[in-house]
Length: 259
Image (cartoon, rainbow, N blue to C red):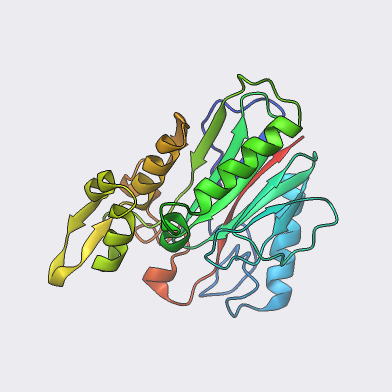
């Protein structure tokens, strides 16, 4: 693993591994420098392919790169699952198969259980997180995760753990009133995650909104992004890609897999 990459600080079981990359460790040229893993952002395809091979070797597992569409679809991964499968979350039980989410401001969320039977990853942009009628990407992936957990034979007392990766922070995520309303209609408590900003805009805490949704789903063990500046993609240009900041940007990745 590259020394700059983030290793989640959470009590995951020994057979579960997770990592979140940064800009460092690849061969892409500016403005995609250097470890761009996105093949849909205008970077040299050969550089992206090389970066993905290097990433896979570092993991010693096979990362599956989804076609993320800002929706709420969940893919169940197998070794034969092709890259480019349309979904915004994925689940795996097979060892050596890495659930992988690419981001450049949206929130990556990784899941496992206290027995390490199942792993999952979700791409939580505001649209996918808000969903429809209070049911979005986190609700869908947790439902599928729990069903897979039962099928895998995990003990009924096995707890779900979640880790929130870097995303655009509440210091930089300016949104319109339609975003605030989308969350408050589903949960009035979401109002606390928005601060008034200039010209009728709001500053939104994406990680805070995700924590609210996870709490409502009964997941109490949530780690990682706490909304402080160190986790903000827009505020740390030397470490993280940010589409909001740069418009033309690479993608970093968060992955989780079983040994």
